[in-house]
Image (cartoon, rainbow, N blue to C red; front, side, top):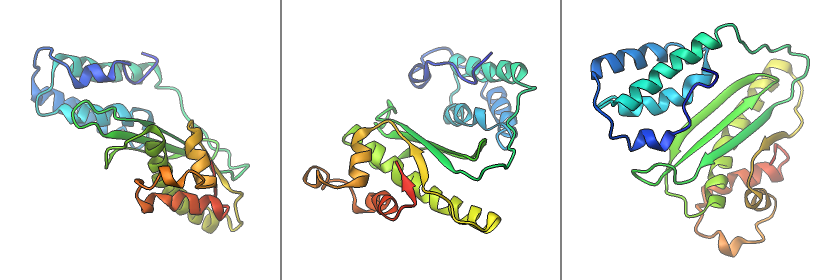
Length: 207
């Protein structure tokens, strides 16, 4: 297998296939969790599969075995950090209203210094009313991680960093972080999420 997960994520969440032995399923998922510290590429799929440990079904079992095929295929692959340049770069994305059960969005983010050094993936409250709002909330959460990583890198290398570029795919998010010209349309967004705008204005972050 060349990817850690099958693409039919929503099918997993609404699966009506036959039930499988929950003990065997939990043993497999639990064993794979030991690999997350060094194999972050399977972190997301394990997060998804862990949600079905109460009543695992055949589709979930096949997806768990898919990970084993992926690990066999990529056992000799690795990421290497050469340390030549200290340039922190971030990437964010979200699955707006992706949960079929509660309508919540899943936020994802990762940071790179040439190789991935930090990542996150979690469901977020409250339910976002628009894709722009959801992306703005993600940017705020990732912005907190930026501040912590920048302080850590400053302690390690002793020199200030250029503004951290966070790559996102929502123009409304970028415009709101630079200028709240559409403030009348964003009053429903909690004030705490404007934290990302302050980071942009202070030159710590560039979306």
